[in-house]
Structure formats: structure tokens, C-alpha cells
Length: 186
View 1 (cartoon, rainbow, N blue to C red):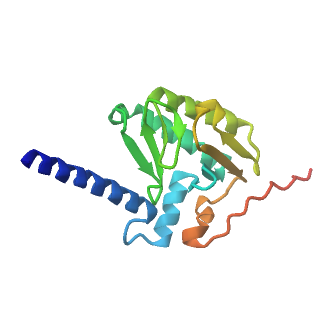
View 2 (view 1 turned 90 degrees about the horizontal axis):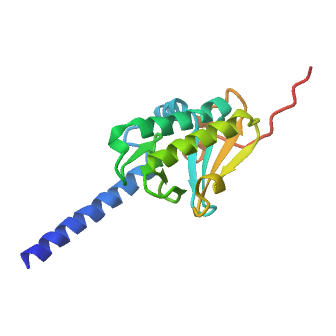
View 3 (view 1 turned 180 degrees about the vertical axis):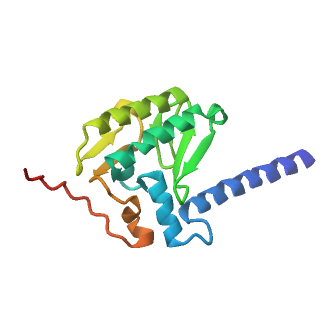
């Protein structure tokens, strides 16, 4: 009976920790100002948004800003602490972008995941697609990385100088409409 009680306590603790992690990713840390949130997005180089209804992760930024994501992935892969399955790191001011070590590559409502080799391959794939990307384009990645994944990764490429904090319209109230790049006149 004592063993059953201990198992129940451990299980309840695990559920509580999971619940707390989900709560913390939805809100910025207490005391974080709007300016600090903006600085976090700018440091990351892109804005990240998970749309559960449309089943997609969208990263919004300039081509240069979006190129920080492959660097982030390669940094994750190079960290020996991330070698074990289920290891993960959260990024962004809300911790909403989660990269996770997992045997099978995929995108879901919790994380962008894969083996370290798979995540390195995703970084190379993204870099390759961004080399020819034009402002106003949307790059969708799913088939090339994880064909059976329920979610997709969308790279919303904006013009050079784009401020990723401006895409955080829900919390910071800034507009973030995607507009095609204006044609340059000779």
C-alpha cells in the first residue's frame, strides 16, 4: 500500500510539473516589460507562432533573421546535454519555441523534434531554402523533413530590416501583415 501511495505522489508531481511548464510557455515571465519582450524577439532574430488550428509553426522574419533558426538548431545539436531522447530547449520570450531530441523527426503542437542528425538536416534544409527566398515568400517545410508529421513549419520571409517584435501583435498590439516586397526601380 505504501508503494502505491508513493507511485501516486510521484505521478501527481510529474503531472503538476508538466502543467506548470505548459502554463509558463503561454505567458512571459512575471515582471517582463513589453520592451524586454521586444528585445527577446530581436535577439532571436525572428518571431515564432504556433497555430494549433492550422497545424503549423510559423517563423516570421527577414531572410537574415530567419537564418538564426538554423544556427539555433546547430547550437542545440552541438550541445552534449541534448543528446538524450526527450531533452529539449525552449526559445523566445515566452519559451513557446521548443526544440526536442526525439527518434522520429516531426512537428507537432509541442515541439520541433528529431534526432540530432535529423535536426542538423533540418538546419541545412532551411539554410538551402532561404538562400533563394525573396521577401514576401512563404516556405513550407514538412514533406522534406517529416512527411508523416501532423504539423508543418512555415518560414514567412519579410524584407530586410524587418523587426520580429512587430509580429507579436497578440501581446504587443503591433500589426504584422505580410506584404510582398516592392519592386525596385532602376
